Length: 429
Image 1 (cartoon, rainbow, N blue to C red):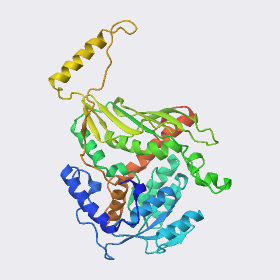
Image 2: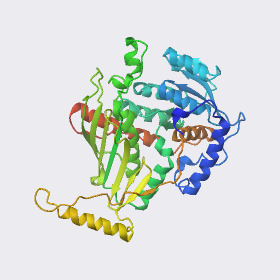
Image 3: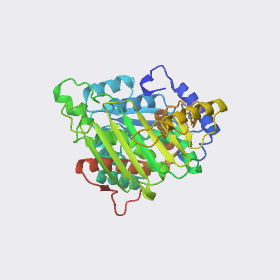
Image 4: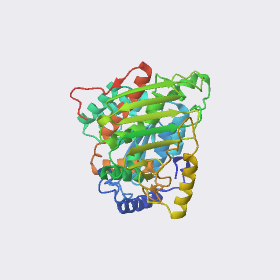
């Protein structure tokens, strides 16, 4: 079910049953044991006793923060104890949707003074992530922060340091870590099913102006912060960051450098951030990774194509394709051979030519029947980690490397030069 289809009729009991079924499904798919951050999602999700309850505050309850809050309200063992937003309509809506039970704040620093608050969920704009994460960790709160990690390299490193000093749990909003098809893709890759990865191509295409309605022109930059450089890094931090996290994960490496071009070639409406980006990343072992995104054409949607000499994984589609598929039935082979003879005989600019077509057009599903709620799952895992006092392994590594990689692409386009991975002395990821 998509996040947009959430409704008040969906109860915590529905979610509890969902988690039970999920644990069984994950176990039967063979991925649960090998992915340690799934360990809290066992088949016995928490009940409703005070011992099970995790009290959370949501900082930033706009479009994304609101969705996180609505998911949390359906998560077993979670209580929304506080909400915070400095935009009045969001502030009032959060109070209403929490049933008036949550304390409401305009200033997140006052929320952090609550002694009985276990953790916070940060859904504020990118430029506020660093100070909110660092202040929350210093206040002794566990932190879930939406992607991307921060606005620049220095802020990313600052969050890492604050996390290491705090001893608290930190989680980043990368849903694909909680998608069974992506976990299964990682298993296939590690087993050598597609051979050594030689290239990864990723894209994320939409066709809209990315604007939100505003009550008046004075609210333009506050509401449409994703379009302005003072507050955001646009397509790279809002979209590319998700795919770059997956790339780092499957390659078990971070990029060496990045080059790219960006432009505003369609939505010429005063925005400062690109509506079209093309970035190439250099990774170890001669692997190049390509990311492109535009918001003026959605024909190719979003995809991560992970390629090796033995096959290709299209992770968003949830399929794996072989370079050596089984031979088709005899009649299909006969038709193909007849068609190939015709093509071979047609001269195109000189010698005869036959196109290189797909080797396997059907592929097979990574996890047949999967239709999970990755955002719901990751929030359940965050609550479970707090309840059990066990940090989710490597989550800060995913957060830092995905966030820094996204920033490298943005800086490469802005500065018109190759941007190398930042070397930060003494930083323990």
